[in-house]
Amino acid sequence: MIRRTFTPAAVPFAAVVLAMLPAVLDQTMLATALPVIAGDLGRITDVSWVVTAYVVAAAAATPLWGKLGDRIGRKRMLELALALFVGASALCGAAQTIAELIVLRLVQGIAAGGLMSLAMATVGDLVEPRERGRYQGYIAATFAVATVVGPLLGGLLVDAASWRWVFFVNLPIGAAALAGLRLRLPAAPAEPPERPFDGLGALLLAAATSTLMLACIEDTARGALVAATVALAAALVVQERRAADPIVPLRLLRTRTVAVVSVALFLATASLFAITVFVPLFLQTTTGATPTEAGLLLVPAMLGITVSTNVSGRLISRTGRYKRFPILGLALMTTALAGLAALAGEPSRTATAAGLVVFGLGFGMVTQVLVTAIQNTVERRELGIATATAGFFRALGGAVGAAVLGAVFAAQAGATAREGAGLAGVHRADVIDGVQAVFAVAAPLAALALVAVLALVEVPLRAAAGPRAGKATA
Image (cartoon, rainbow, N blue to C red):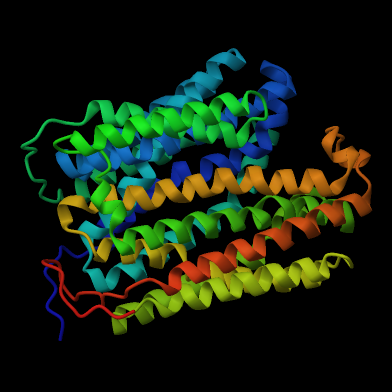
């Protein structure tokens, strides 16, 4: 029988999930409010920056929060990130101009980067290594539910009250989460920092990440942004090699597990955007689905994710073995994307739903399991930065995937897509060609992630925290 050495995790874990909830719901709720915000505060062309500022800031800040959690303590930093997010939400709801809203969304994104990365790392503090897969599965299920509920809740708030309540709703949720963290989350011991904080490395990392994300998202000045990214990345490498306590230890990135997981998460998340971005567009344009119906038609994927994360998590807890799950999951993702590409020429809601179920079953066995693999191969003092590294490459994969797949769609869909016509102005055949090309490109991305995971060295999950043990298996 396994002797448990951790504080009973159910209540503290619930507090952690509640703390993540505002950040998880925020983006999905906001999507329904963007047209109304454009009408109240600015032009429709300005609204994209409301999303861009948040996404870029969250990705850039993620490693910094992870490092600070390792140095200062994750409970303290998680409370700070949540308080900052709630405060920024209140100010976003009161914004009077689009410029104010964009700046406040930048602050909100910085806080969101902390909420996501610190919450994931906190799971590593709360539960035994072998149990982490199951608890990470619960987090993935929360994400899946939020993806469906968020747009519906956002629409209700906009219709019944105002777009400002998309932000104000975070206040009571955040207050309850803060109380839960303060009262129920135990503070894991943090080693007092003996070496100075790598402030210059943090600035260089944030700047390099921001320019790279902007290069992926924005068409204008892309060449200059790429050049700036290369220069900043080179400076970051030089700084990290000489820093006493680097913000991102280069030796960590050179370890096989971290390198393999980072590549796999990058590619898997990039392929995910073929589903989340282009399936609703495809269904609305080719099958006559309304925006709400198109959102609800993503439910099969979310159900697949929920089922597979929980089943795989329980099996991992029982056996301590995890490598087989991302291999199977990425194989299912590749199959689903290839099938959707083959069937897109004859649009069908039923066929699309079947493909989404298979994709969801696969995706649910990938990201959270790979995070568990990283956490199992690092010491507790590096748990935060290791988890943040995984989150960073997921965010980067999402940005690059959205940019690449968007370019593929625009190139294949023809002039109407490139000219920015609305759905009514885009020919049905053009959308079919564009989305079919997107699926055809996304399938090899998932296949490449599968090839990467095959190189993962499995270290059986420990039944208790402490020095790493167990014989690695390829």
